[in-house]
Length: 298
Image (tube, rainbow, N blue to C red; front, side, top):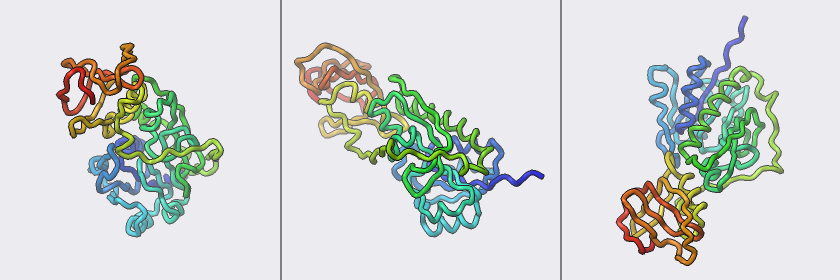
């Protein structure tokens, strides 16, 4: 006689987690509940799970505080054997961690134990990393510190922006999740402990981290722009008291070593070239359109 499939509660709030939820549902698992957020909060890539569960008859809890007494009560009532938590910015408290008998599966888009913490896709691109990772792990009371269940290294190429890396990471994570499903009953037995000596944690970013300073070298500005492209908020600069978002650019080498950073070297119909601390940046997508003359300074 076959044993009953473990009862799964899924927690998530972003586009990546919505995609993985679709994949989970397609695998005919015993999904007994879903938790999502009422409002986007700080999630630029927020996804409303209402469309995912429509006509699925799966209980849905919308909450902005997964650790509230009402949320914990709801989770206890559905009695999950395992929780899968992907794309949720709050750390889960011990009150939730101890509920499922098989544990809680978390996900982090980095090669743990490296680069724990906030905004891992954005930081990886902004810092110009050549590779990152896609990691499923067992959640404990730390931040991305639990035993690793599955990890794949993901290459990062110069032509990839946040949108491209986000899609690549989602595809890799979908495959990993499917591979983990047959082993849900014994996750605790094969998890690999993280080496804390190799760990670092990235901090939370704010609006200042997305501001373009033309004294930066062009490569750093290029990396900043691609790191904050869609689905994120966009890198920005201010000119004449108006904020502009730069969505796409490239490094250009004009040999203009005696020109100050921020000077507009060229303004054509489809591009804008700005002198940087080292080399220059050619902007091909900006919002809103900017009215500036060659020779002016941003």
